[in-house]
Length: 84
Image (tube, rainbow, N blue to C red; front, side, top):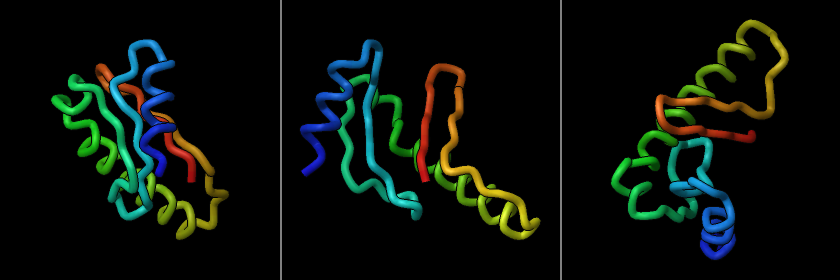
């Protein structure tokens, strides 16, 4: 259902390797990767990033802190952006 939209985003974003919609459980709902994105295992990296966001959210709740609704992470070669 969302694959065409993700493909359009990737094709219109210079240098993009892929895009995905992932649940808070780390499982992708839909994804589209270029060949380079698939080779780089970006879905695995995104699942790890989701785990970090989930841990930070739990820690924030435990400490009674405000929880951010989005997060970004720059890797050595990749950029991840998440919205909760």
